[in-house]
Image (cartoon, rainbow over all chains, first blue to last red; front, side, top):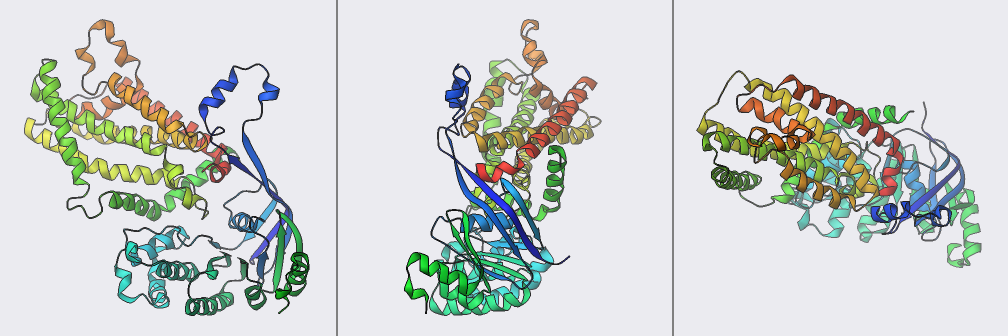
Length: 256
Length: 263
């Protein structure tokens, strides 16, 4: 069974609960009213976050997601990670998919760096033996040395990022889903992260990353997907999609 | 997949991930007592003070023999504490774990099991008081003592399904944790914890007879005070656990997909 991601006509409605919608009182009060039809609006705002997404990724594919803020990039990654079940359509993901959406996930301030390696590793679905085997490699990448034995609350945000990134990229993922994470950190870290991602590319079979920087997509992806307001504007080879996107947004800087 | 099947498979995956929920449970305890010298034993101390004060005050108020009354109150309070925190914290199980639920695709019931684990650890700390009281006032009957184990299991299972439902409802309706807290407060006073059924006059006996929580308390308390719980107590608590779990699992399966959207 080879690794693949297949999305067929995927649509996703996100219910946005405002305070009134999540209140039981409102629900109960509504029961007594007669004009149910007019009152049937429960106050839940439904946002169509994705609609009609079709795509297929094979082993070796590196997909870059582009689009404005709120275009649905993170939501699409969450759908691929299995966090959000789609409202309509079929999502077929084969292989171990590891999401790296928020670097602060499962980072416990009172625990030491090493304890956090275990916590985050477990959250990402690693086994204890796997974590033990990887922890030296992780420690080396973070360059945190003795700091790893200090509680996380003493870390700077850059140190947290290094640790989080090192753990997430240590997992033997077949599918890696990255959200804007490599955009942060200082220059030397960025370079190192890019190198590590390349190594990872050799191991992971499919990589999907959402990122604002078209340069990074050009460097590390072979496919690109342009999302606009939850719909797929263009999907295909990096150059074509980036050119379309550049034309649309009128950003000439993209053309090198 | 039917709702029940979905929930069962989630439960199975959750149980297999025991390393994760035990760790998450511990972390929470560690966070609460970070850098405190004796850590969770503060709970033991405060519970001990409560048991001592209530035992002495209410014991003399009700004109009870302290050697009988204090063990009863100690066991009742420690058990009630476990039950109410299973339900109370269960109602926050999904809400408090929203950052995890929205970032990684884990089985959902690990967040309920994490609550269970944490409160079992706390219960173990509080149980020191029960042991202490039993040591001071003596064990009434060694024969009934082993019955405490199945009694505790039934007790925990009942607390868990209520917590599981509370967690699900609270994720959808955010007033629920407050409602649950208020209901538990009332339940504490109508459940024989500071009193027992025999202390009530015939006219008011129904408070105990029709209160399912009374049977739950009895099933853990009676074995420790030298009474073998009657068959009716075992049947009521057993059937409650079974039906409750089936219902809670069905509900979890039914709304399983919605959980990430709710939190």
